[in-house]
Length: 143
Image 1 (tube, one colour):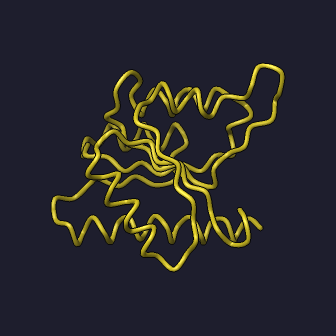
Image 2 (tube, one colour):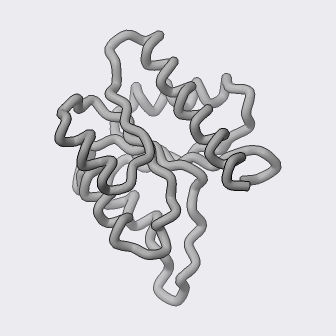
């Protein structure tokens, strides 16, 4: 966290969702930073510690879609759970899946919250704003 700003990692392949989340973040009261990765394999690569180091610069919060190319969001969650240096990463799932098994498995694999993408724009905006609020409250609570 830099001077109150948070760093978000968005793992999402849908361009419309990326655009909307980026826009909502820009419009928020926060000066947060957003890094976007478009597939699960790249997300794992981005989060993995360099070969000669155990240090990883973690984002303050990862927003993860489950339906991703190359590696699914559930595979990403499993990989993160298996890497000791990533155990403190806070993850919120934001996906089109409403499958109860996905919800349960995501939480078992460490997601702190699970949101299904609604079809109404206003509901989508409210969910994304809630994610930003969750992140800021969680980070302040851990400071």
